[in-house]
Image 1 (cartoon, rainbow, N blue to C red):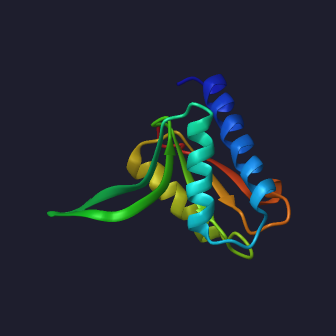
Image 2: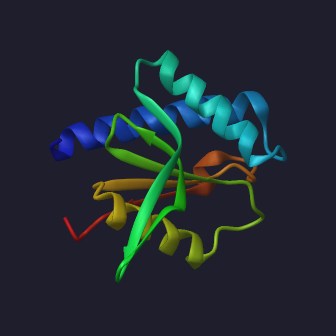
Image 3: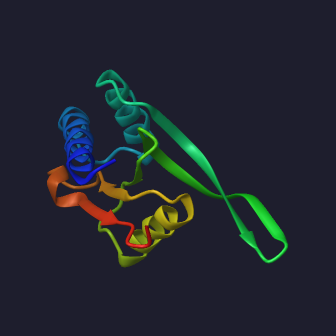
Length: 129
């Protein structure tokens, strides 16, 4: 997927997230936003996978359920959803780890616990691919 396609997909995802946030408002559980956003993305014609298990290998050990990705859109962009007072650096680090391990080019960190969703969005790029 080229940069223009990634940008277009990102815009569609952010639009879907903003529409859901406007309708639901802040203060709900992360799971509510996850289910609502997945539904909205499907309505917009995207392929959506939720709660995607991401195994890791360490030496001779494989841990099948080491990580659980909130949402993967069109097999390309990882969405990490939060409903927290404030995003922390560890949230970005977590998403970057997911991107690297899943070999995906781009991720969006979306915090729904804000008055305006625009204030709760971080776009992260996997620089290792």
